[in-house]
Image (tube, rainbow, N blue to C red):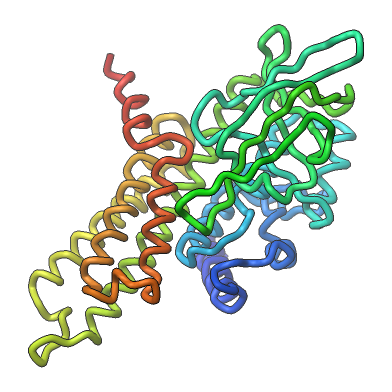
Length: 347
């Protein structure tokens, strides 16, 4: 079986499971554990599937297509990715196993747009202490442990494992327009840190830290791709049954052209996402994040218009996708910020 066939099967299974399991958009964390999605990228020796980001991207797209409310972005995509980016050590493996098994939930305190390592690790006469603040951290509320990207006195980036209920650490939920996402502010004021909870990255720390921010941006782009596809499918379906003047509105040229434009935008978006998955890097990820998240907002907005008056009602559900797309557009770098990164290549 080819990778394409495997991905198609995974996509089909994920779509069916989310359609049956979602309760008002919320999907229980235990279901993600049972499906094996949390441990997709974890090594097989700790109970994971040993897969790659391409498989995770399929799940992210389907979660966006279903507008599912889960902790998958922070608790799996980022947390597992961060743990796998560390140099192998006993304490890391001891945490990775219960995370994959579902007995412990972890979140990576990676701010959604800012310095990727906002915490400072210092040595005092009382031992190791950590200070700092990260805003708009995905899925930190409800996590038992937090992984804090920090820098030591020499500016070297590393990851620090801290219990969520540790003295000096506070997780404050941040209300946002999109009800399907959970974001929080993580504040640490002198929390004590054990020496064996300070973990170094495998290889160049700055490159690994940059890869984590790119992973976050690409995961959000995959989610937005699912949003756009869901909105196109819903619009085409509605245009086939809604009638005006005795004809389905889908037979009108203006509606046909609008749906065709949406399809073209989504096709370009899918190509950019696939390119970033196959060849991850600052250029490909920024191109995907900038274009896809902006496209999702435009497609969802056009879907709301083409649904007519019903599209603006609470019952239609289009507003859920539009709000999610709008938040995705700003998470981990706005389109303008990513285009500015791309522009530096030509200076």
